[in-house]
Length: 487
Ligand code: NAD
Image (cartoon, rainbow, N blue to C red; front, top):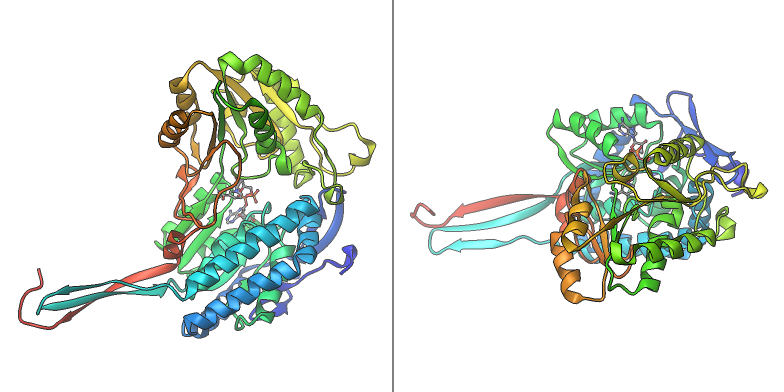
Protein backbone atom coordinates (compact mmCIF):
# COMPACT_ATOMS: atom_id res chain seq x y z
CA UNK A 1 0.00 0.00 0.00
CA UNK A 2 1.46 3.40 -0.86
CA UNK A 3 1.01 6.35 1.44
CA UNK A 4 -1.27 8.11 -1.02
CA UNK A 5 -3.76 5.29 -1.51
CA UNK A 6 -5.08 4.93 2.00
CA UNK A 7 -8.70 5.40 1.01
CA UNK A 8 -10.76 2.78 2.81
CA UNK A 9 -14.42 1.82 2.83
CA UNK A 10 -16.14 0.41 5.92
CA UNK A 11 -15.78 -3.26 6.79
CA UNK A 12 -19.16 -4.95 7.25
CA UNK A 13 -20.12 -8.62 7.05
CA UNK A 14 -16.67 -9.73 5.97
CA UNK A 15 -16.42 -7.31 3.04
CA UNK A 16 -15.70 -3.72 2.16
CA UNK A 17 -18.78 -1.50 2.06
CA UNK A 18 -18.94 2.06 0.69
CA UNK A 19 -20.68 4.55 2.95
CA UNK A 20 -24.34 5.35 2.36
CA UNK A 21 -24.05 9.14 2.73
CA UNK A 22 -21.58 9.70 -0.11
CA UNK A 23 -19.57 11.90 2.26
CA UNK A 24 -16.05 11.16 3.45
CA UNK A 25 -13.85 12.10 6.40
CA UNK A 26 -10.33 13.22 5.56
CA UNK A 27 -7.67 11.37 7.50
CA UNK A 28 -4.45 13.30 8.09
CA UNK A 29 -0.81 12.41 8.61
CA UNK A 30 -0.17 14.52 11.73
CA UNK A 31 3.63 14.43 11.39
CA UNK A 32 3.43 16.15 8.00
CA UNK A 33 0.11 17.99 8.18
CA UNK A 34 -0.83 16.23 4.92
CA UNK A 35 -3.84 14.25 3.75
CA UNK A 36 -3.27 10.53 4.25
CA UNK A 37 -6.56 9.12 2.96
CA UNK A 38 -10.30 9.10 3.40
CA UNK A 39 -12.96 6.93 5.00
CA UNK A 40 -16.74 7.14 4.61
CA UNK A 41 -18.51 9.58 6.91
CA UNK A 42 -21.15 7.00 7.76
CA UNK A 43 -24.73 7.50 8.86
CA UNK A 44 -27.77 5.61 10.12
CA UNK A 45 -28.01 3.20 7.16
CA UNK A 46 -24.41 2.10 7.57
CA UNK A 47 -24.88 1.54 11.26
CA UNK A 48 -28.11 -0.40 10.72
CA UNK A 49 -26.30 -2.62 8.19
CA UNK A 50 -23.42 -3.25 10.59
CA UNK A 51 -25.73 -4.12 13.49
CA UNK A 52 -27.79 -6.43 11.28
CA UNK A 53 -24.60 -8.08 10.07
CA UNK A 54 -23.43 -8.52 13.67
CA UNK A 55 -26.79 -10.08 14.61
CA UNK A 56 -26.23 -12.67 11.84
CA UNK A 57 -22.61 -13.14 12.88
CA UNK A 58 -23.71 -13.63 16.48
CA UNK A 59 -26.01 -16.50 15.53
CA UNK A 60 -22.98 -18.36 14.16
CA UNK A 61 -20.27 -17.29 16.59
CA UNK A 62 -22.11 -17.89 19.85
CA UNK A 63 -22.84 -21.45 18.66
CA UNK A 64 -19.22 -22.05 17.61
CA UNK A 65 -17.41 -24.44 19.94
CA UNK A 66 -15.27 -22.39 22.37
CA UNK A 67 -12.25 -24.43 21.34
CA UNK A 68 -12.73 -23.27 17.75
CA UNK A 69 -13.23 -19.66 18.89
CA UNK A 70 -9.98 -20.01 20.77
CA UNK A 71 -8.17 -21.34 17.68
CA UNK A 72 -9.39 -18.44 15.54
CA UNK A 73 -8.28 -15.91 18.14
CA UNK A 74 -4.84 -17.53 18.41
CA UNK A 75 -4.57 -17.28 14.62
CA UNK A 76 -5.49 -13.59 14.77
CA UNK A 77 -2.82 -13.00 17.44
CA UNK A 78 -0.12 -14.81 15.46
CA UNK A 79 -1.02 -13.14 12.16
CA UNK A 80 -1.03 -9.69 13.72
CA UNK A 81 2.41 -10.39 15.16
CA UNK A 82 3.68 -11.67 11.80
CA UNK A 83 2.30 -8.59 10.07
CA UNK A 84 3.27 -6.21 12.90
CA UNK A 85 5.42 -4.02 10.63
CA UNK A 86 2.61 -3.43 8.14
CA UNK A 87 0.15 -2.55 10.92
CA UNK A 88 2.72 -0.45 12.79
CA UNK A 89 3.30 1.59 9.66
CA UNK A 90 -0.41 2.35 9.20
CA UNK A 91 -0.73 3.21 12.91
CA UNK A 92 2.30 5.50 12.84
CA UNK A 93 1.31 7.36 9.68
CA UNK A 94 -2.20 7.86 11.02
CA UNK A 95 -1.61 8.46 14.75
CA UNK A 96 1.83 10.09 14.61
CA UNK A 97 3.40 7.62 17.06
CA UNK A 98 6.87 6.29 16.32
CA UNK A 99 7.35 3.07 14.34
CA UNK A 100 8.89 1.58 17.51
CA UNK A 101 5.72 2.34 19.48
CA UNK A 102 3.67 0.95 16.60
CA UNK A 103 5.58 -2.33 16.59
CA UNK A 104 5.30 -2.63 20.34
CA UNK A 105 1.55 -1.99 20.29
CA UNK A 106 0.96 -4.57 17.55
CA UNK A 107 3.27 -7.26 18.79
CA UNK A 108 3.40 -6.94 22.56
CA UNK A 109 0.07 -5.31 23.29
CA UNK A 110 -2.68 -6.16 20.78
CA UNK A 111 -1.08 -9.48 19.73
CA UNK A 112 -0.55 -10.53 23.32
CA UNK A 113 -4.11 -9.57 24.31
CA UNK A 114 -5.60 -11.71 21.55
CA UNK A 115 -3.35 -14.54 22.67
CA UNK A 116 -4.45 -14.12 26.29
CA UNK A 117 -8.17 -14.11 25.52
CA UNK A 118 -7.75 -16.94 22.99
CA UNK A 119 -6.54 -18.96 25.97
CA UNK A 120 -9.53 -17.89 28.05
CA UNK A 121 -12.19 -18.58 25.39
CA UNK A 122 -12.55 -22.27 26.27
CA UNK A 123 -12.26 -21.75 30.03
CA UNK A 124 -15.46 -19.80 30.59
CA UNK A 125 -17.56 -21.86 32.95
CA UNK A 126 -20.28 -21.54 35.56
CA UNK A 127 -20.87 -22.79 39.12
CA UNK A 128 -23.25 -25.25 40.71
CA UNK A 129 -24.86 -25.46 44.14
CA UNK A 130 -26.81 -28.37 45.57
CA UNK A 131 -29.45 -28.16 48.27
CA UNK A 132 -29.36 -31.85 49.27
CA UNK A 133 -32.42 -33.71 48.05
CA UNK A 134 -34.21 -30.50 47.12
CA UNK A 135 -32.64 -28.33 44.45
CA UNK A 136 -29.79 -28.33 41.98
CA UNK A 137 -28.82 -24.81 40.94
CA UNK A 138 -26.23 -23.85 38.38
CA UNK A 139 -25.13 -20.87 36.39
CA UNK A 140 -24.96 -20.39 32.63
CA UNK A 141 -22.58 -17.81 31.23
CA UNK A 142 -23.76 -16.47 27.89
CA UNK A 143 -22.50 -13.81 25.50
CA UNK A 144 -24.05 -10.36 25.95
CA UNK A 145 -24.97 -10.34 22.23
CA UNK A 146 -24.05 -7.57 19.82
CA UNK A 147 -21.48 -5.34 21.50
CA UNK A 148 -20.74 -1.80 20.33
CA UNK A 149 -17.20 -0.48 20.83
CA UNK A 150 -16.18 3.16 20.46
CA UNK A 151 -12.43 3.63 20.34
CA UNK A 152 -10.19 6.73 20.69
CA UNK A 153 -7.63 7.82 18.10
CA UNK A 154 -4.52 7.27 20.22
CA UNK A 155 -4.62 3.49 20.18
CA UNK A 156 -6.98 2.00 17.59
CA UNK A 157 -5.66 -1.52 18.23
CA UNK A 158 -3.53 -0.81 21.27
CA UNK A 159 -6.72 0.27 23.09
CA UNK A 160 -9.29 -1.35 20.79
CA UNK A 161 -7.96 -4.86 21.45
CA UNK A 162 -8.68 -4.40 25.17
CA UNK A 163 -12.41 -4.77 24.60
CA UNK A 164 -12.55 -6.47 21.17
CA UNK A 165 -10.48 -9.52 22.19
CA UNK A 166 -12.51 -10.47 25.31
CA UNK A 167 -15.80 -9.68 23.53
CA UNK A 168 -14.96 -12.15 20.77
CA UNK A 169 -13.58 -14.73 23.19
CA UNK A 170 -16.89 -14.65 25.08
CA UNK A 171 -18.87 -15.33 21.88
CA UNK A 172 -20.19 -11.84 21.12
CA UNK A 173 -20.42 -10.20 17.70
CA UNK A 174 -18.78 -6.80 17.56
CA UNK A 175 -19.34 -3.47 15.83
CA UNK A 176 -16.50 -0.96 16.27
CA UNK A 177 -16.47 2.73 15.61
CA UNK A 178 -12.88 3.98 15.57
CA UNK A 179 -12.08 7.64 15.89
CA UNK A 180 -12.49 9.52 12.61
CA UNK A 181 -8.99 10.89 13.23
CA UNK A 182 -7.36 7.42 13.19
CA UNK A 183 -9.64 4.76 11.69
CA UNK A 184 -7.24 3.00 9.30
CA UNK A 185 -5.59 0.39 11.54
CA UNK A 186 -8.88 -1.09 12.73
CA UNK A 187 -10.32 -1.32 9.23
CA UNK A 188 -7.31 -3.25 8.00
CA UNK A 189 -7.39 -5.38 11.15
CA UNK A 190 -11.03 -6.40 10.60
CA UNK A 191 -10.17 -7.67 7.14
CA UNK A 192 -7.21 -9.61 8.56
CA UNK A 193 -9.32 -11.11 11.34
CA UNK A 194 -11.81 -12.49 8.82
CA UNK A 195 -8.97 -13.93 6.77
CA UNK A 196 -7.99 -15.75 9.98
CA UNK A 197 -11.37 -17.45 10.18
CA UNK A 198 -13.86 -15.10 11.87
CA UNK A 199 -17.25 -15.78 10.27
CA UNK A 200 -18.75 -12.82 8.33
CA UNK A 201 -20.43 -10.30 10.60
CA UNK A 202 -18.54 -11.16 13.77
CA UNK A 203 -16.34 -8.05 13.58
CA UNK A 204 -17.65 -5.00 11.74
CA UNK A 205 -16.04 -1.56 11.53
CA UNK A 206 -18.07 1.56 10.75
CA UNK A 207 -16.49 4.96 10.21
CA UNK A 208 -17.65 8.52 10.61
CA UNK A 209 -17.51 11.59 12.79
CA UNK A 210 -18.15 11.08 16.48
CA UNK A 211 -20.61 13.97 16.58
CA UNK A 212 -22.87 12.19 14.05
CA UNK A 213 -22.08 8.48 13.78
CA UNK A 214 -20.89 8.22 17.41
CA UNK A 215 -24.09 9.77 18.66
CA UNK A 216 -26.24 7.47 16.48
CA UNK A 217 -24.12 4.54 17.68
CA UNK A 218 -24.74 5.09 21.38
CA UNK A 219 -28.49 5.47 20.73
CA UNK A 220 -28.80 2.42 18.48
CA UNK A 221 -31.32 -0.08 19.90
CA UNK A 222 -29.46 -3.03 18.34
CA UNK A 223 -26.59 -2.96 20.83
CA UNK A 224 -26.70 -5.12 23.94
CA UNK A 225 -23.67 -3.42 25.45
CA UNK A 226 -21.61 -0.28 24.83
CA UNK A 227 -17.87 -0.33 25.53
CA UNK A 228 -16.36 3.11 25.31
CA UNK A 229 -12.80 4.33 25.61
CA UNK A 230 -12.26 8.05 25.21
CA UNK A 231 -12.62 11.35 27.00
CA UNK A 232 -14.74 11.79 30.11
CA UNK A 233 -16.87 14.46 28.37
CA UNK A 234 -17.79 12.11 25.49
CA UNK A 235 -18.27 9.22 27.91
CA UNK A 236 -20.91 11.22 29.78
CA UNK A 237 -22.86 11.88 26.57
CA UNK A 238 -22.72 8.20 25.67
CA UNK A 239 -23.86 7.17 29.14
CA UNK A 240 -26.88 9.45 28.85
CA UNK A 241 -27.84 7.81 25.56
CA UNK A 242 -27.19 4.31 26.87
CA UNK A 243 -29.21 5.00 30.02
CA UNK A 244 -32.41 5.37 27.99
CA UNK A 245 -32.10 1.68 27.11
CA UNK A 246 -30.28 0.50 30.25
CA UNK A 247 -27.68 -1.47 28.32
CA UNK A 248 -24.47 -2.74 29.85
CA UNK A 249 -21.69 -0.12 29.72
CA UNK A 250 -17.99 -0.14 30.37
CA UNK A 251 -16.32 3.25 30.39
CA UNK A 252 -12.56 3.81 30.20
CA UNK A 253 -12.20 7.58 30.29
CA UNK A 254 -9.71 10.38 30.83
CA UNK A 255 -7.05 10.88 33.48
CA UNK A 256 -4.81 13.40 35.20
CA UNK A 257 -2.49 10.93 36.84
CA UNK A 258 -0.20 11.86 39.76
CA UNK A 259 3.40 10.70 39.69
CA UNK A 260 4.74 11.00 43.26
CA UNK A 261 8.45 11.18 44.01
CA UNK A 262 9.39 10.73 47.68
CA UNK A 263 12.71 11.98 49.03
CA UNK A 264 14.08 8.43 49.43
CA UNK A 265 13.49 7.51 45.76
CA UNK A 266 16.23 6.39 43.38
CA UNK A 267 16.44 9.86 41.86
CA UNK A 268 18.02 8.88 38.53
CA UNK A 269 15.32 6.32 37.84
CA UNK A 270 12.56 8.67 39.01
CA UNK A 271 13.83 11.38 36.65
CA UNK A 272 13.79 9.03 33.66
CA UNK A 273 10.37 7.78 34.76
CA UNK A 274 8.96 11.30 35.06
CA UNK A 275 10.13 12.16 31.53
CA UNK A 276 8.69 8.96 30.04
CA UNK A 277 5.44 9.35 32.00
CA UNK A 278 4.47 12.64 30.38
CA UNK A 279 6.46 12.97 27.18
CA UNK A 280 6.17 9.48 25.62
CA UNK A 281 3.77 9.73 22.67
CA UNK A 282 3.70 13.48 23.40
CA UNK A 283 1.59 13.00 26.51
CA UNK A 284 -1.23 11.43 24.49
CA UNK A 285 -1.64 8.37 26.69
CA UNK A 286 -4.65 8.10 28.97
CA UNK A 287 -2.52 7.17 32.01
CA UNK A 288 0.21 9.76 31.28
CA UNK A 289 1.83 11.10 34.45
CA UNK A 290 0.80 14.70 33.89
CA UNK A 291 1.03 15.81 37.56
CA UNK A 292 4.48 15.38 39.07
CA UNK A 293 4.41 15.66 42.87
CA UNK A 294 7.89 16.00 44.33
CA UNK A 295 8.75 16.00 48.05
CA UNK A 296 9.90 19.50 49.05
CA UNK A 297 13.29 18.36 50.40
CA UNK A 298 14.43 17.21 46.92
CA UNK A 299 12.25 19.50 44.80
CA UNK A 300 14.77 22.12 43.61
CA UNK A 301 17.47 19.70 42.52
CA UNK A 302 14.92 17.32 40.97
CA UNK A 303 13.28 20.02 38.86
CA UNK A 304 16.64 21.43 37.76
CA UNK A 305 17.71 18.00 36.50
CA UNK A 306 14.29 17.35 34.96
CA UNK A 307 14.55 20.54 32.90
CA UNK A 308 18.03 19.49 31.71
CA UNK A 309 16.67 16.12 30.64
CA UNK A 310 13.68 17.68 28.87
CA UNK A 311 16.10 19.69 26.72
CA UNK A 312 17.49 16.39 25.37
CA UNK A 313 14.14 14.87 24.37
CA UNK A 314 14.02 13.71 20.77
CA UNK A 315 11.12 14.97 18.63
CA UNK A 316 10.23 13.78 15.14
CA UNK A 317 7.93 11.92 12.77
CA UNK A 318 7.34 8.14 12.92
CA UNK A 319 10.56 7.21 11.11
CA UNK A 320 12.70 9.23 13.54
CA UNK A 321 11.70 6.85 16.34
CA UNK A 322 11.78 9.81 18.69
CA UNK A 323 10.25 9.88 22.16
CA UNK A 324 7.87 12.62 21.05
CA UNK A 325 5.88 12.78 17.82
CA UNK A 326 3.22 15.30 16.83
CA UNK A 327 -0.11 15.74 18.59
CA UNK A 328 -2.97 14.28 16.59
CA UNK A 329 -4.56 17.32 14.89
CA UNK A 330 -3.99 21.00 14.26
CA UNK A 331 -6.99 21.69 16.53
CA UNK A 332 -5.46 19.64 19.34
CA UNK A 333 -2.21 21.58 19.00
CA UNK A 334 -4.15 24.83 19.40
CA UNK A 335 -5.88 23.41 22.44
CA UNK A 336 -2.56 22.37 24.03
CA UNK A 337 -1.01 25.77 23.27
CA UNK A 338 -4.07 27.38 24.85
CA UNK A 339 -3.42 25.43 28.07
CA UNK A 340 0.23 26.53 27.96
CA UNK A 341 -0.87 30.18 27.76
CA UNK A 342 -3.22 29.63 30.69
CA UNK A 343 -0.41 27.89 32.59
CA UNK A 344 1.80 30.95 32.22
CA UNK A 345 -0.74 32.91 34.28
CA UNK A 346 -0.97 30.19 36.94
CA UNK A 347 2.58 28.91 37.46
CA UNK A 348 6.23 29.23 36.46
CA UNK A 349 7.17 28.00 32.98
CA UNK A 350 10.54 26.25 33.28
CA UNK A 351 10.80 24.36 29.96
CA UNK A 352 9.28 24.52 26.47
CA UNK A 353 6.11 26.53 26.17
CA UNK A 354 5.54 26.60 22.41
CA UNK A 355 6.36 24.77 19.20
CA UNK A 356 9.85 23.43 18.33
CA UNK A 357 12.11 25.66 16.18
CA UNK A 358 13.37 22.78 13.98
CA UNK A 359 12.44 23.74 10.37
CA UNK A 360 11.78 20.05 9.58
CA UNK A 361 8.93 20.01 12.11
CA UNK A 362 7.03 23.08 10.99
CA UNK A 363 4.39 21.30 8.88
CA UNK A 364 3.43 18.69 11.47
CA UNK A 365 1.49 19.31 14.67
CA UNK A 366 4.44 19.37 17.08
CA UNK A 367 4.56 20.94 20.56
CA UNK A 368 7.75 21.32 22.64
CA UNK A 369 8.05 19.35 25.88
CA UNK A 370 6.70 21.82 28.42
CA UNK A 371 7.14 21.92 32.20
CA UNK A 372 5.48 24.23 34.71
CA UNK A 373 6.75 24.41 38.29
CA UNK A 374 5.04 25.69 41.43
CA UNK A 375 1.63 24.67 40.09
CA UNK A 376 -1.20 25.11 42.61
CA UNK A 377 -3.52 22.12 42.54
CA UNK A 378 -6.38 24.49 41.75
CA UNK A 379 -4.83 25.55 38.41
CA UNK A 380 -6.48 24.40 35.19
CA UNK A 381 -3.20 22.76 34.11
CA UNK A 382 -3.29 20.67 37.30
CA UNK A 383 -6.95 19.71 37.07
CA UNK A 384 -7.88 19.28 33.40
CA UNK A 385 -6.69 16.60 31.02
CA UNK A 386 -4.57 18.33 28.36
CA UNK A 387 -3.58 15.19 26.40
CA UNK A 388 -0.35 16.80 25.29
CA UNK A 389 3.30 17.18 26.40
CA UNK A 390 2.62 19.50 29.35
CA UNK A 391 3.80 18.61 32.86
CA UNK A 392 2.66 20.31 36.09
CA UNK A 393 5.06 20.08 39.03
CA UNK A 394 3.86 20.63 42.61
CA UNK A 395 5.82 20.04 45.81
CA UNK A 396 4.58 18.44 49.02
CA UNK A 397 5.91 18.33 52.58
CA UNK A 398 5.18 14.77 53.73
CA UNK A 399 3.38 11.50 52.91
CA UNK A 400 -0.06 12.74 53.95
CA UNK A 401 0.16 15.91 51.92
CA UNK A 402 1.50 14.03 48.89
CA UNK A 403 -1.37 11.56 48.93
CA UNK A 404 -3.95 14.28 49.60
CA UNK A 405 -2.70 16.25 46.57
CA UNK A 406 -2.66 13.11 44.42
CA UNK A 407 -6.24 12.28 45.34
CA UNK A 408 -7.50 15.85 44.98
CA UNK A 409 -8.61 15.22 41.39
CA UNK A 410 -11.79 14.41 39.56
CA UNK A 411 -9.91 11.55 37.87
CA UNK A 412 -8.72 8.18 39.13
CA UNK A 413 -7.17 6.33 36.22
CA UNK A 414 -3.56 5.74 37.27
CA UNK A 415 -0.83 6.88 39.65
CA UNK A 416 2.83 6.19 40.38
CA UNK A 417 5.04 6.21 43.44
CA UNK A 418 8.84 6.40 43.59
CA UNK A 419 10.38 5.34 46.91
CA UNK A 420 12.93 2.82 48.18
CA UNK A 421 10.82 2.24 51.30
CA UNK A 422 8.51 -0.76 50.93
CA UNK A 423 6.19 0.52 53.66
CA UNK A 424 5.76 3.93 52.00
CA UNK A 425 5.14 2.20 48.66
CA UNK A 426 2.45 -0.10 49.99
CA UNK A 427 0.72 2.49 52.15
CA UNK A 428 0.61 4.80 49.13
CA UNK A 429 -0.77 2.01 46.92
CA UNK A 430 -3.61 1.53 49.41
CA UNK A 431 -4.32 5.24 49.84
CA UNK A 432 -4.30 6.28 46.18
CA UNK A 433 -7.72 6.60 44.53
CA UNK A 434 -6.77 5.19 41.14
CA UNK A 435 -7.27 2.02 39.16
CA UNK A 436 -3.54 1.49 38.64
CA UNK A 437 -0.51 2.16 40.82
CA UNK A 438 2.98 1.91 39.30
CA UNK A 439 5.76 1.56 41.88
CA UNK A 440 9.28 2.59 40.83
CA UNK A 441 8.41 2.55 37.13
CA UNK A 442 5.78 4.04 34.84
CA UNK A 443 3.35 2.38 32.41
CA UNK A 444 3.92 -1.36 32.68
CA UNK A 445 0.77 -3.18 33.82
CA UNK A 446 0.35 -6.92 33.27
CA UNK A 447 -2.48 -7.96 30.93
CA UNK A 448 -3.08 -10.88 33.24
CA UNK A 449 -4.29 -8.63 36.08
CA UNK A 450 -7.72 -6.96 36.03
CA UNK A 451 -8.51 -3.43 37.14
CA UNK A 452 -11.24 -0.80 37.06
CA UNK A 453 -10.93 2.98 36.92
CA UNK A 454 -11.93 5.22 39.84
CA UNK A 455 -14.07 8.38 39.93
CA UNK A 456 -14.62 10.25 36.63
CA UNK A 457 -12.15 7.97 34.85
CA UNK A 458 -14.92 5.46 34.28
CA UNK A 459 -16.27 2.12 35.43
CA UNK A 460 -16.05 -1.56 34.58
CA UNK A 461 -13.26 -4.13 34.46
CA UNK A 462 -10.42 -4.15 31.95
CA UNK A 463 -7.71 -6.69 31.27
CA UNK A 464 -7.11 -10.08 32.80
CA UNK A 465 -9.61 -12.76 33.70
CA UNK A 466 -12.25 -10.52 35.32
CA UNK A 467 -12.75 -8.40 32.19
CA UNK A 468 -14.35 -11.37 30.42
CA UNK A 469 -17.39 -11.04 32.73
CA UNK A 470 -18.14 -7.61 31.24
CA UNK A 471 -18.92 -9.51 28.04
CA UNK A 472 -21.07 -12.24 29.58
CA UNK A 473 -24.51 -12.43 31.07
CA UNK A 474 -24.92 -14.84 33.95
CA UNK A 475 -28.10 -16.83 34.35
CA UNK A 476 -28.98 -19.01 37.33
CA UNK A 477 -30.94 -22.20 36.67
CA UNK A 478 -32.72 -24.03 39.52
CA UNK A 479 -34.06 -27.55 39.18
CA UNK A 480 -36.46 -28.89 41.76
CA UNK A 481 -35.44 -32.39 42.79
CA UNK A 482 -37.40 -33.01 46.02
CA UNK A 483 -40.30 -31.62 48.02
CA UNK A 484 -38.40 -29.07 50.15
CA UNK A 485 -38.71 -25.33 49.58
CA UNK A 486 -35.04 -24.80 48.81
CA UNK A 487 -34.49 -21.92 51.26
P1 NAD B 1 -12.94 11.43 22.30
O1 NAD B 1 -13.77 11.28 23.51
O2 NAD B 1 -12.94 12.75 21.60
O3 NAD B 1 -13.34 10.37 21.19
C1 NAD B 1 -13.37 8.99 21.48
C2 NAD B 1 -14.29 8.31 20.49
O4 NAD B 1 -15.62 8.78 20.71
C3 NAD B 1 -13.96 8.56 19.03
O5 NAD B 1 -14.21 7.39 18.29
C4 NAD B 1 -14.96 9.64 18.66
O6 NAD B 1 -15.27 9.67 17.28
C5 NAD B 1 -16.17 9.22 19.48
N1 NAD B 1 -17.13 10.30 19.74
C6 NAD B 1 -16.92 11.63 19.75
N2 NAD B 1 -18.07 12.28 20.06
C7 NAD B 1 -19.01 11.33 20.27
C8 NAD B 1 -20.39 11.35 20.64
N3 NAD B 1 -21.02 12.50 20.87
N4 NAD B 1 -21.03 10.18 20.79
C9 NAD B 1 -20.38 9.01 20.59
N5 NAD B 1 -19.09 8.92 20.23
C10 NAD B 1 -18.41 10.07 20.07
O7 NAD B 1 -11.45 11.01 22.69
P2 NAD B 1 -10.14 11.01 21.79
O8 NAD B 1 -9.67 12.42 21.58
O9 NAD B 1 -10.33 10.15 20.61
O10 NAD B 1 -9.12 10.25 22.76
C11 NAD B 1 -8.50 10.89 23.82
C12 NAD B 1 -9.25 10.65 25.11
O11 NAD B 1 -9.41 9.26 25.32
C13 NAD B 1 -8.51 11.15 26.32
O12 NAD B 1 -9.44 11.71 27.22
C14 NAD B 1 -7.89 9.90 26.91
O13 NAD B 1 -7.60 9.96 28.29
C15 NAD B 1 -8.97 8.91 26.62
N6 NAD B 1 -8.42 7.55 26.63
C16 NAD B 1 -8.73 6.76 27.69
C17 NAD B 1 -8.19 5.48 27.77
C18 NAD B 1 -8.47 4.59 28.95
O14 NAD B 1 -8.12 3.42 28.90
N7 NAD B 1 -9.06 5.08 30.01
C19 NAD B 1 -7.36 5.03 26.74
C20 NAD B 1 -7.08 5.86 25.67
C21 NAD B 1 -7.63 7.14 25.62
